[in-house]
Image (tube, rainbow, N blue to C red):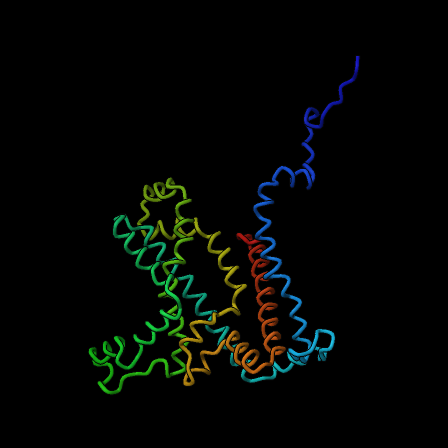
Length: 320
């Protein structure tokens, strides 16, 4: 009688995982769908990295790559010894931190409140109104902010009506540098708070309704249910988004600062991207601009991995 080989499954052993190429063949449809994205990623994200070499050269556009003068870390040394760059770095960190704190707290708070609304029509109206500013270009949004904060704008008119300032002594808000960070934070919240609530509202729909029923039976009120059921339920989403935003801590933006900034508030409105535009491109010092960009990218990379590692050590949700 011919002996029939016994498979690992028949022996009670775990089945050997399929090889990489077998898995690739089985999922070939998904792989083919991802090819255009991988090509785009390589062409626009990885291929341009060769340009980082400009930061280590005294780059002259008219010369070929092999005829450039290599200067090592000279441009990086200049950046960290330049007072303007240190001010720009301060502004970038300050506005990023303000945006991070206000963006998270306002979006989570609005999502919690909307989740408790039982009147469907009112809830949809509030959602629509809060989403709408996100779809405005920053050119339009900045114009609205400028008109609102102008000497004859609604804010000054309200202050005069309340008697807090005298007519004729209106405040030029965008002309006072110390006010710029607050204006930027308020404008960013107004523009994006509704859009930022979408992911939290989606996460809340995944919470088991039985948890709310059990909390209500135990005598928990609305705020207690939000604190002990809703917030823990969306905690993994909050942690993951926080890690991603920490990785972008040096990317405070460009358009709002560029459009709302002027000569009177430039000491508080200029960020790294504007510094690169002003000193790197406008003045033809491309090497200095690339050096500033490399610094921002490397710091963002380190912050992302540090935040992810810290979340892993704390046993929280993480990116990888």
